[in-house]
Length: 87
Image (cartoon, rainbow, N blue to C red; front, side):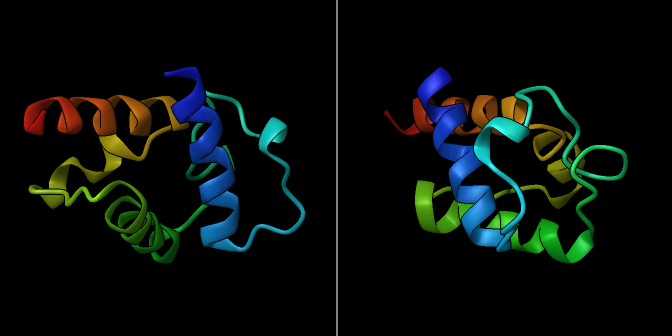
C-alpha cells in the first residue's frame, strides 16, 4: 500500500501538471480537494483518467467519486479493492 500511495502521488503531480508540488508535499490522508491540494472538478476528471490509464480501473458509480478521491490513501484503497475483485 505504501508503494502504491507513493506512485499515486507522482502520477497525480504528472497528470495534473502540478509543477510546484513534490510527492513529499502530499500527505497520505490530506484532502485532495478544497482545503487540501485545492483541486477542482476539472482535476477530478483528470484523476478519473489517471485511474483508467495507469490502473485500468473505471469508476462504476460516479457518486462514489468524492469518497474515492478524498485522499491519496482512499484512492489507493479503492485501487487495491478493485484489483482484488479481478484477481
